[in-house]
Length: 221
Image (cartoon, rainbow, N blue to C red; front, side):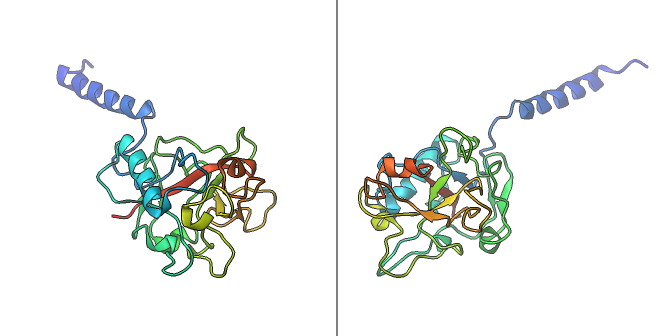
């Protein structure tokens, strides 16, 4: 049976639409979570929380997801300590491909959907993990597994994200993979402190244990 001209116009439009998705263009319109594709370049010195938020905002703007309140998932220590979980809004959060990461704060710190395949950068790219060269899966958080700040004198935040020398920062593994099957090795936000000959917070120190100063970014609105 011969099809009408209108029929073929409809088919062409549908196929063209499918083609737009087929090219794998990153989903940016409703992106509300990403792993930063870059850090400050100064190790654990991010310019404090304000500087870290600026990194998130700048990268989101470049990816076409500006105009939102972007916050770095980072805790601080000492008087007036800030909990990372309190900075990021209420969710839900979607990655650059439109995949949901977690519906709310409780799920984010419980049975979330963060894996190597979903913890993408703002460009929609997979972060290199264990087994890749170079491994960059160490993400700065300064946080305990529940997203709260550390107590006590031990530095876990590179002097509240202002040090590129002495100190340490708690990191998580974006690929949920480590040296063994322990809970810390598989933790996205609280795996181990940074360390190294440069004092623990330099860019080279972060590289030595599998990182490059990347951070998690969330849209808080």
